[in-house]
Image (cartoon, rainbow over all chains, first blue to last red; front, side):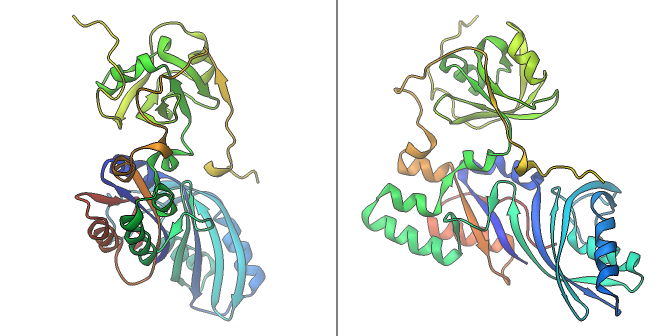
Length: 254
Length: 78
């Protein structure tokens, strides 16, 4: 399998879980086990758009229980003989090998996944300058060691915040930052702004006004209520990303 | 049949509750972190070739950059 594989360095490994569960896009070659009309193939693929049930395959890293996964779209691209090329946008944890097998069952002839390329993982896509090969990493890192120019580092490494681009943000006061770094839940007075679309239980990123992520949290109130309340918890912490004492401690102790 | 919008198509608006400023003495904008810190809080959007496993690719990146811990966002084996 080839394509987009975000690599998390040192501290940014703390957001690996977010990337793991983020939505993906793949381009897939499916091999049919019989001769089927193109129109029939398109029709069957169409049936798999929206929510599907999947049991993880025998060789998988998760518990094998029936799960629901969302298929945002399946775009038929082309077909040659028994090979079908399609693009699929889906929720994290969707097994494309299983999808091909199931498509084969519905089509009546059987099918298997022949080739797979990931074209998106959350916010990361294969278009754009930031997409690098292993050779690229080797080349640019060597060049950076020579002249230590920031621009060279930025050619192949990006801030972990880019990996959180699809997660709604809550921006907080400088004075609220260190308490969060010490594990305190986010309370209303610390909030400066919040993105729309947050519901109770949404994963949110707590940000400084400089755009650094302080922590990942779970919202306890929807956007509109966060804007209205003047006291109480608005988000409970899931993972702190910023080290303590990056910002000054301003709360009273004891 | 109505389709669910993929998360990357959702546009979000920022709603302001209170005005504030940030002190330049503390922290850094993500793109202005000192080099060593920039790397430690960095992500590489890697173009994986066929052959090596995701795990092996991560191990190579770790060795090239001389880091102690490197992970990846979801295997590309299944």
